[in-house]
Length: 315
Image (cartoon, rainbow, N blue to C red):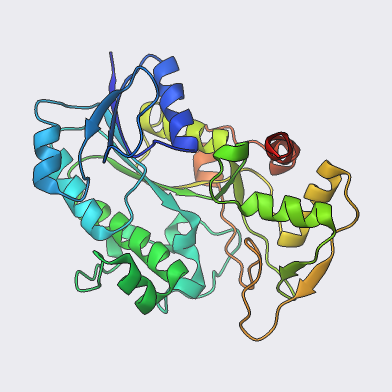
């Protein structure tokens, strides 16, 4: 029976990923710090993934056909994984983010020359790694780089650690913004729009919001499953449903799905924060590489009404 290790994966689309792997005949081992039990039928290894010695002891004697790392946020995390899983897995998949392309999160990134953004825009193997940044303190890192910057830079540098001198075939899944799942969506971002549009409250947006990319929570789980078990591709892979949306397009779709009046907006000024998914710079992602490799992405317009309905059922 094929052996798959999932690091993290105790909530949201990670749980759906584990069920997909089990349904496909894989034996799943979940590694986390014990904060949540994995789905039934999965082995549970309790360890801190940031502690190389503890993780090595906890995984003693275990080898895997693939590892899916759901909680790799810093180059320190990547370095630990690289050392612990070298010789222990045939394939390593890291859940990354489209925010690695966000030009607002690094002075080294220029606005994309072409849209949507392709994987080669950020070459992980050549991205600099700075071990002197305060990676062990999220609060200090956020004060230095900002909340969005610390998240995006952590992912870029984590990818770089894996890609620069690979010790196993490595894939970075650069996920679009994940929506759907009803109450399981702990981010509250879609609920923000559903609640405000239904109540007729104005949504804070930029004057000319740029389109961004989305993916359904079941679709990103299916993509991670495919990347770990079906595809032989390595390197970065963008994962997004077809059809980028601006924040106003998202609000219009929410209004249609809830029979609400036309959305109301308030334009933000002078650095004031806008609502989630309102961006003043473009970096929607191109899913062409993964599509050419055979993954059948769906259309945002096809699943967004269902995602809204799932939220309403939880209300």
